[in-house]
Each structure stands twice: as C-alpha cells, then as structure tokens.
Length: 148
Image (cartoon, rainbow, N blue to C red; front, side, top):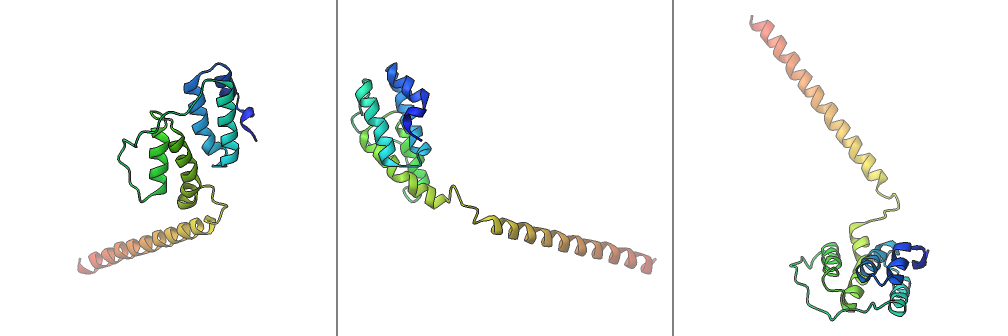
C-alpha cells in the first residue's frame, strides 16, 4: 500500500488544499502503522507538488501525562492541528509504535485465552452466587416452616 492510493491526499495536494494535506499526512501515520519511510515519501510528494511546508515548531500547549505513550501520542497528534511542525510530526511517528506496543493494539489473538478464562471465572462466580442464594432461600423456608 502506498500514499498514492489515498485519493483524498492526492487530490488535496493537486488542489493545494493544505488543511486536507496535513490531515491526510497525520492519518497516514496510523494507516502506515508508523512506517517512517512510507510516510516521509508522502511528505516529499506534498512538498514537491503543492505549497505544503512544515510550520515553525511551537511547544505543546496541552498538559499531558508523560508517563503514557498513548497520552503523549494523542496529545501530540492533536497538536498537529494547530502546529504542523516537522519536530512534532516526527515525534508522532516515533510515538506510534510505542503506543501500539504499550496498549497492545493489533493483538495477534494472544488474549483469547484470557477472555475465555475471565468468562469461565465469571460463570463460576454466578453459579456459586445462585447456589448460595438458593440455599439461603430454602434454609429460610425450612426455618419458617419449622418455627410455625
């Protein structure tokens, strides 16, 4: 897959719609799963075929939790809307695989057994609770009839 398959991007470049170009470049980070070479190829295409250029870098204005790659990724990618700097763009590309790894996105199915185990535990808890509840009710009825 390559950037030329994305007609919104190609049309944005052709029409010199810089907002569309920037938006599509930001989306490509996720579409190409952080593959820097493919993304930078699209950047070069935009630079060579439109008036696209990176903006001067401004510090992040949004408060962010620097302990989570996900939080940093989503903060930086949202900051691209107001400041599409090369530094920020490259930082978002750098953070993407770290976020995916940390949050275990695109899991290869390894957690299916964990889910099945949780469902089984939940099922056992429910059965146990029902049996205890039924025992209490039956015990209450027996006690009621005995005391009557």
